[in-house]
Image (tube, rainbow, N blue to C red; front, side, top):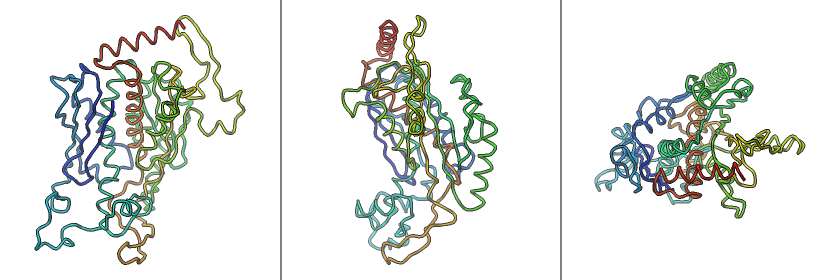
Length: 393
């Protein structure tokens, strides 16, 4: 399974093409639109979410609600494009048109964005050519692709959920939700304004977001993704680029503004003795092999263990501030305070949705790399056979 995304933030539409999905998988636009709506929610989101109502169009690879095995094309129209048709138009400008009156050229790079280095790399003197593609608007299609991946995983008995663990230094207390089932955890976070499973921490997070907005500042946080039901042995120890840890870390770090990843206890392991880090192995007839704890986050030796996979991602504060930072104009070389395109005081809740779908995509790709995938029924049989085999090993 592989995929590509295309499109600019204020262009006509965003597009994704997925290749390698098994045939006969149930798939509807409603399945994807539900997840796209969640990405646009969460306390702290800005004005763009009021402009766009993201709804997907499936234009290939699906017939009568089932995948065909051929490439699936997804697209989301940018409603705001009607205000940008001249600025973002595809056709060359007429000779009698002054580009300065049309293009809204940007020569002032914003700190913390791709603007300056992207301009250097691709030779763009108009930095809009960079920011339009480097925008987090691209994560719309990452969620759309992930919604398809989640549907595939659900058919295989693999469940995913993500929640906000920390915002602005305020941490959720795991004891408030660690006894919840995956279904109960999802119900809890979907009813919460910041997608946090700890109600007390949630109230403090909301207040912190409002405070940051009042100060013209932004705050970041930590999101946690949990995958339950992944069979043992996904990934491999035999080559560095097949290790599931690395694939998941790479997926998490591919999200805009993410600057760190933890698996299981993560960086806390550096402060603990080995006796408090590693997971003892046990066995019983009902469960087969399992770990008495899950400190390593469901991964050993680059492979899934069968325990829940737990991955955290660190999102930095959004760099576009209403209290702008200083930069330098690339034409005049004069200093200035950075321009504001649009900003959210905090996008961590939305980022948790993106993280869930990005990780789900990486897991789906690893599963399809491991097992036969021509049809969904064939894939189910393969996975079930593996589960039975490892239980009796």
